[in-house]
Length: 215
Image (cartoon, rainbow, N blue to C red; front, top):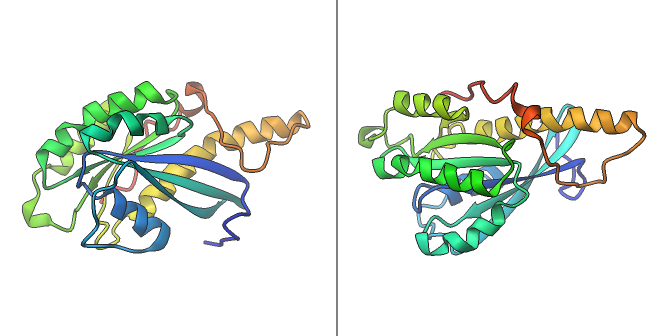
């Protein structure tokens, strides 16, 4: 996959990582953007973000990925950062049932602060700790189907499915906005470089029912 300079891109998509504290959101972010993993990573305080550009259909898409803190006391701070997000990875730890049980609440909060068209992927992280699994893949798959969102299991430690998860979300967003870009071009109106694209719910209705990245 070809890349260009980080400041040279056609589209900027804001993607948020949400979920309970300790599920591995920061390591998913660092694995995708820098191919790094830290066993000693500390809980995120407030909000951090990193970027990475990928090429999709000869266009460069820059992902601005926000890592929102999972601690309850920071929820009021991080909720403001949902604004403008067109994609989200909702993360739980496959070894801790409570983090999966809380996904419904995270989805509710996400949907309250974003457009209904947002592309959402449910991510079961820490799939490398197989002997401690507490959340069945089938249960997560069924939940994702019920919520009409994508699903995958990942391991930030082993770099399993991390790349695929982020790229799938970005590809799905691009499928929606590329249609808008073509329509804009036909009216001789160019989209400003780096504009964050908003999507309508009708634009993604045809793609949200699909599955993705099964482990």
